[in-house]
Length: 152
Image (cartoon, rainbow, N blue to C red):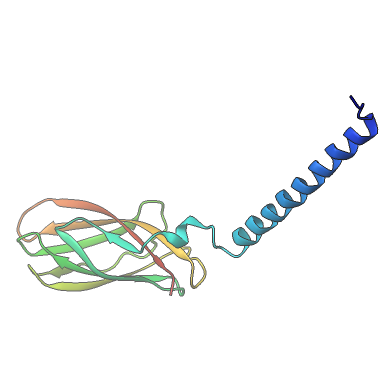
């Protein structure tokens, strides 16, 4: 039986670590490059959405890089409504639009300002509270919704 010298064992261990060390290094650099260029950003993989429920339907929406957002609402309440206020959940919406009404089944565009917008091409989420009142002597109600879209 031959004896393997201590020097030979150290050389085998060093070669093993060097070979797999380079492979791990290449994998880490590749993952770092993907993350740097935004391929691993999960928000890029999520779809655009606008959700205020079925009664106040969001037909079209966009967030502009100049600090405004536009939403086209359809009234599915069964009665005419008047939108009295629009506010941001986290104080991102700064402008209160004038009171305007939407007849049953029709659409109308709402425009308001956003205090902080992201750069063009990035996705941004706005959490918005719309205060409305049904036509007649009904009390005011709030609908909270989310707009998640690419800044244009």
